[in-house]
Length: 214
Image (cartoon, rainbow, N blue to C red; front, side, top):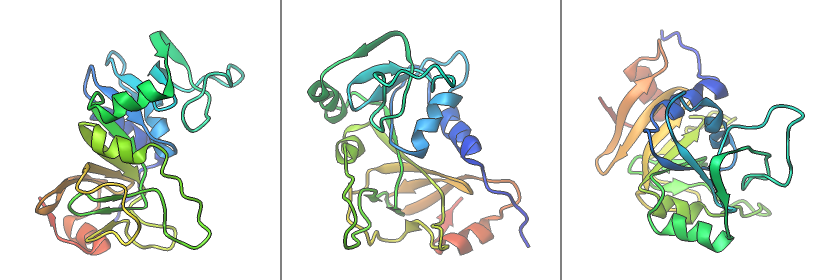
């Protein structure tokens, strides 16, 4: 019987930050992905972009130091590093659509084994559509990563053979970072990058319900 512990939200943010290369231009999506800004390794220059028109964001401000005129796309207060800049929303989307971002990190409701992304609506009656700039990021960034819990609150796996929710993008996700494992999406299906200590490959395949190549 496997004995393992899930990654905390902080540990998951650290795991994603670990893979962001020096000099990368990165957009962090609303929700869990914003935590990545607080865990970028010291000495690694990463230029953070926000779709509301900021380049060069720093970590979240200390308590009491918030400036609510300086917020990210999720309306959370942020800091600005030396050399950071502000610009028009249209210019921000031109960066996103024009292939100028190396990585975007997004949340998701579902990701298929081949990298299809569903992250803006569950399709439920009365649900508020929340696509934002996700479609532009998903197809515009050179690499799209997803950061999410592997399972829903009711225990269903969010990594699926085919998405049942409305799609954001087709075959756009390269990596899935979760509280139990890191997976790569390929045209042939899922490939394992790592798991939390104590979680066996067989147990992970049972949880996901799909074959996962080593």
